[in-house]
Amino acid sequence: MARLHRSRFHFTWLQIVTHLGSLAPLGVMIWDGVHGNGNMAVNPIQELTFRTGKTALVLLCLSLCCTPLNSIFGFHQAIKLRRPLGVYAFLYVLGHFSIFLFDYNFDPSMLYDAIFNQRYVLVGFAAFLILLPLAVTSTKGWQKRLGKNWIKLHRWVYLAAVLVIIHFVWLVKADVRQPLEFGAGLLALFIVRIPAVKRALRAAAQMLVPRRGGRPPEPRRSTPEAITSHD
Amino acid sequence: MDTIPSSEITPAHMYFSRRKFLAAMGMGAGAAVLAACSPGAAATSGTPGPVVAPSGAKTDELGAALTPYDDITTYNNYYEFSVTKDGVAPLAKGFVTNPWTITVGGMVNNPKTYAVEDLIKKFTQQERIYRLRCVEAWSMVIPWQGFPLAQLLKEADPTSAAKFVRFESIYAPDRMVGQKDNFYSWPYIEGLRLDEAMNDLALMVTGLYGMPLPPQDGAPIRLVVPWKYGFKGIKAIVKIDLVDVQPTSLWMTAAPDEYGFYANVNPDVPHPRWSQATERRIGEITRRKTLLFNGYGEQVASLYEGMDLRANY
Image (cartoon, rainbow over all chains, first blue to last red; front, side):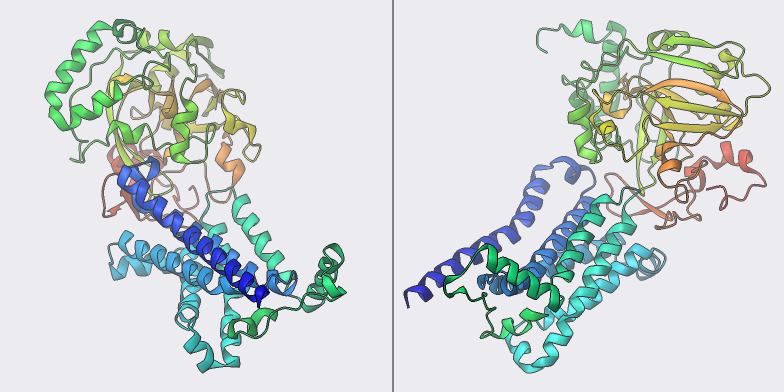
C-alpha cells in the first residue's frame, strides 16, 4: 500500500508538470502578444501560426514517447500522460487551424485555394482531419464504447504524425534540417514500437538497470489506456 | 550613448529637416520617428547619413500607409545574423559599417573602389517609397533613401560584353554569426540583367525614414528592386561586377527549382510549394491581393516582353 501511495504522488506531480508545461506555450504567446514582443508585434497572425504549429508537433512527439517509456523502461506513470499530451497537442492544432481560417478571412474560395493549391497546407489539413476523430474519441467513454476498434482508430496518429512532418518540410524556405530532426525523432519512436526491437530494448534496459527480482519491467496493462501500450 | 552629443550623430541640416518632417507627419507617425532616433538605431551603424530630407509623404503612390519604422527595423530577413526575424536586430546592433568600400569591376571601362560616404556625396540622394514584397507572402511600404543603381553603373561604364550585374555581400562570419552556419553558401550573391539594373526603379539604398540605414536593414548600402521579391535586395554590398553570364544567387544555389534568377513578384506564378496570389501587409489584418510586378508593371513590364514568366521565375 505504501508503494501505491508513492506512485500516486508521482502520478500527480507528473500530471501537474504535464499540464503546466502544455499550457506554458499558450501563456508565452499571450504574454508576448500583450507586450508586443518581437515578431508577435509585427506579424502576429504568422507568428501565432508558427508557434501553435510547433507546439502541437512537440506535444504530439511527447505523447508518442509515453508508450515506449512504459513498455521498454517500465515507466508506468508515462502512460497516464499520453492522453493529456495528445489532447493538448490537438488543442494547439485547433488553434493553428483556426488562425489559418482567420488568416484567409474565413473566405471559402480563398480557403479552397489556400488548401488545394498549396501542398503543404493540403497535407496539414489531412493531418487535421485525421486528428479530429482521435481527439473526439479520446475520452474513457469512447474508449470503452469502441473497445478494440479504439486501438485501430488511434493507430492513425502515426499517419497524422508523418503528414505533419511532410507539412513542416514543405513549408520551410530551404533549410529542412529542423523538420527532418523532428522526422528522425518520430522515426525512432516508430522503430521502438516494432515488437522485436522493443523486446531487445527492454532486455537491454533490464541489463543496465536491473530490477528487484531480475524480472524485466512489465508494462502496465490494467488501465484502459494501457491496452494500446504495445502498439 | 549619453556621452555623444547629438550634433555628432546627426548633421544639423538633417536635424532641422527632421523637425519639419515631424511637424508634417503629425503625432502618430512622429512617434515612430522619435523611436527611430533612440540610441542604437542610427548611432551604432556609423554609416554616413543621407543628405536628403524625408518628403513627409505618408503613403505610397497607391495610397497605402507607410510601415512603421519599428516594424521595418525589428522584422528582418537577414540570415547572416539570424534566421528568426526578431533575432536579427539584436545581433546586428553595433555591426560596424564605417569605413566601408564597394568595388565596382568586371566588364567595365572604369573599375573603381568607392567609399560609401563618397557615393552618398557623389550621387544625389533621393527618397523612394517602395512596396517590399517578401517571397514569404508578407509586405511592407518603406521610405528608402538612396540613388539609382543606373547612375553608378553609368559611372563604371559597362563594356559591350557585359550582360548581367553580379552583387556580393560582405563575408565576415566573426561579425555575422549566421554566416558560421554552412547550410547556405556565403557570401550572399544576387544578380540582375543589365537592362533590369539600368531601370530607374532599381535603387542603391543608404537610408531609411530620413536616417542612415540601420545594420539590420542592410547598412551601409543595399540594393532594393521593388518589382522583385525581397530576397533580390542584397544587403551590405561590398562588390559589384559586370559579367557576361547569368550570376547564380545564394537562393538559386540553396534551392534551384524554387528560387529563380528573375524572382519577379507575380501572383499567377506560385512558388512551387505555396501560392503568391495574396500577401499580408504588415500591420493589416486581412490579406491583400498581390500585384503583378508588385504594382510597378508600368515601369518594368517591357523588360520581360515575350518572356515566359512561368519558366523564368
